Amino acid sequence: MPTKKDVYQVASQEDRCGPRTKLSIPATLRASGGRAFQSVVHDLSISGFSAASINRMHEGQVCWLSLPGLESLQAEVVWWDNCIVGCAFSELLSPIVHDNILQRYNNNGVIRTAI
Image 1 (tube, rainbow, N blue to C red):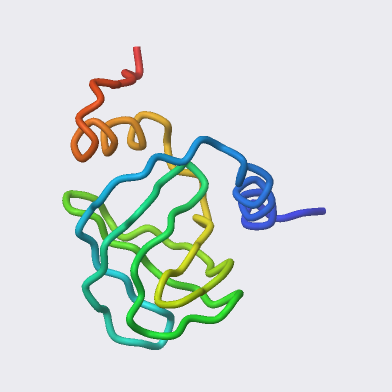
Image 2: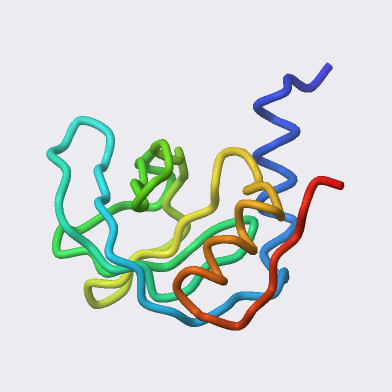
């Protein structure tokens, strides 16, 4: 029987075709066992992100992304290429949270409410 973690991992990997929005968000990224470093998120979807990574990161490595005003989000490295890392969130990002981030940093006016 799959665990909740397995279901979320599959969900985030299966949803990689979700719409990605190009933007620029200052963030902090920390690989498991490493020190946090300043980064910039270059694109975001409910299932993952790509960001600048001055440190080499390896496929399957667990990391945490901290965006302004949010708790750290756990993710898994999917790829790393020339100082850019692509990661899948361990749990899908809430569409409401996603849209509010986009509105804050992309200024496209999209906001979802829980009602």
